[in-house]
Length: 357
Length: 254
Image 1 (cartoon, each protein chain N blue to C red):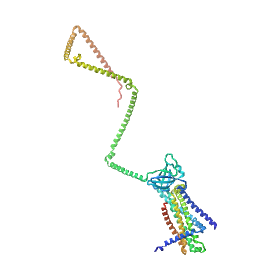
Image 2 (image 1 turned 60 degrees about the vertical axis):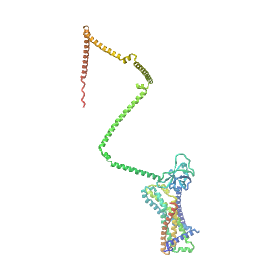
Image 3 (image 1 turned 90 degrees about the horizontal axis):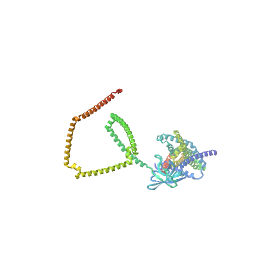
Image 4 (image 1 turned 180 degrees about the horizontal axis):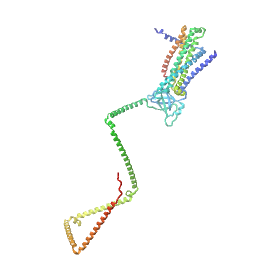
């Protein structure tokens, strides 16, 4: 049965092709994923530590896988050189100043290399270039910081606990908190404070007004308005004052000279002043003369009274007296009239005010 | 009981000699190509429905079973990666090989056993045909080459079933699923898994042929040959798997 056999062989061929096709497809996809088939370009980077990077790990640019790690070699005790294969179609986007950093894919994923672009113009990388590297903070460093934070936290919570204990143990505080009267007082004080502050605000407004006025005044003075302004700003006045002061100084100098002169005259013993002040005999004579004058005036008065009583002159004195009395009487009448007029004015009836309630 | 009396060791030795004879006879010219193709058709193509259904169900069940747990950890997006790794690395090869051993190992054992019992093999020797070349080499070669293909197709079906399974719980595009699968796969996952299926296939064919070729006289010899062929080849599959994982680990491919 050759026909049957042929048909069977065709089926077998299909089966084999399907299987081989599947495996080849998967292998091709995997190979493309690992850049085995695309044209690639090798760049290098020197790290201090690669944190478990393996050959075949991904290299990412902006989060997109653009290559794989080709080779990891130790250059010296502090440098690990990583050679990466980058797809040549991303070559235009990887610049010479890009920074390579070791990272992880997710929290617990594979170690990867991240290429980060930096601002500033730079030429695209050439095959064999050595990229700059950055070392992100390692897990150990982070844990170290965390330990410090933890210690601080312990201290802080301890302190907080002590504070809480103290607050809990304080009777005064609780009394204060449970005192209702205090609350009322505080509220009243607050109200008072509010009132005061309102008044203060008004006062501040007044002060503001005042300063405004003062400012205006000062401006006026500066501009030379008013007497004070004239005083402070007029140049001529200052000159006059200066002149007056100078004259005053000259006058006082003359006065001082005169006084000195006078003193000298007095002390020298010549002249009438010295006689008056220093000669005792002259003083006694003056006193005697004065007493004589007194006695003379007394006798003159007696003589005058005698004259009044003399018949020749008595009429004249009487007329004089009568005239004086009349003038006094007139004055008294006029005073009485004025008092009466004032009283009448006070008595004029004013409409009675309604009683204030 | 001395070492020389151990039946297991004696059996192993005899089987190794049988394998050596297979290599010798297989490399020598006058190849039985039409018979080889017929065996490939019977062993490979005709096993495809069984293996395909098994693989499909395996993929679907693995996905549906792992979904609740993965959802608990919020790692639903990792299901494609996890299922594909499980299927391609381990479940696909092992399940396919066991099913294959059950179907093909037993049939080879029974076929050759009955031929031995009915003295057809002796007749072939008398007629000048090399029964080993005609019966054993073609079958062992066919199993060796067909099992990897079956495994790959079963993997593909299982992954497709996994895609369907994920889509019963949510919506995932085929492109995203493929990317997820590929992101978790490396050559180190695929190549050892494919390579070991050659050895599985070789072991199944070799053990089936050996048990059938050396079947005891009598009717129960046929049944015994079929039975032991399946049992021993299943056991050997696991032993080989253990060996494969050790070697893969040594090569750093895990």
